[in-house]
Length: 112
Length: 122
Image (tube, rainbow over all chains, first blue to last red; front, side, top):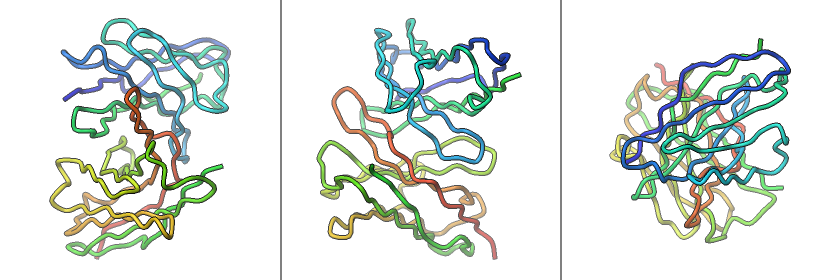
């Protein structure tokens, strides 16, 4: 079954851009994933679906500053013009052949 | 718009059964395009999928929890429930219910409840 690997932390300055990575395990590089944002003390929020081709579809109300891209087994979440409210934990999610949900370990983004 | 709300005891004794309910409102509960699921998050840690159920009762469970988990659905009351038996302190977590898109091109949770904290302690 697929495994999703994320860096534990990332940081970037207010107003700058950042690119977070979610890496699919060997043999699963074509998998589609979803990105979620979890602001401090809040429930996760669905951000987007991201395909291996780099095509992405955002959820309702997700700002234009958020975008997705892919390269091989890597799935990226890019955030431009970073705002203080972007400081959050970001999780990627996929599923296996048994219809089981799989989450990455999450990346804690700090906005400096 | 669709909303989910968890409810249940915030404190459960070790070896007992944790029981939570998720009420769904403001949208279709009986669509075949979605599953309904439970996810938990221990304090300071990441997300762990517990299991999912369709409105017709098809279930999928996390292999590591399968022997202790039961998820059921009540389509008349528009809610679904989680039971986790023989709990220990390791089951202390924030428990979320969520809607899961179930299509050929995406299976992911797209609407989440606010979560409910459950502590296992005597």
